[in-house]
Length: 86
Image 1 (cartoon, rainbow, N blue to C red):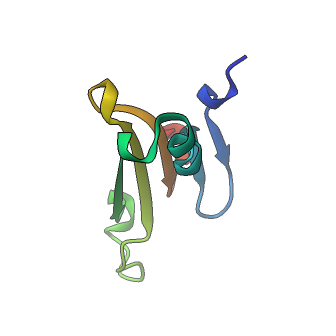
Image 2: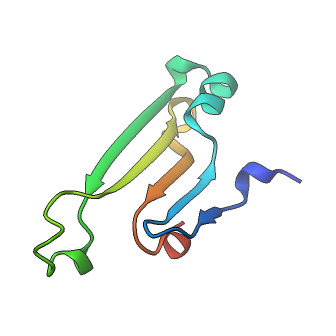
């Protein structure tokens, strides 16, 4: 069984979800020069109506393999509904 392809979610007040390789594991498997990392912070639409949450409080990271036409080999998400997003 290849467990790195099993989605995982941690149900805390701000949920976390991940699938695929971590950044460290991708560096070991594909080589540091062969991966591209994309980071993004954002505010979910459902929080845009609440004035108390003004900062970008959610985070996502994509890990892509350059050798396979930027194939996504890792996805990490911290925000609401992580179980559904992941």
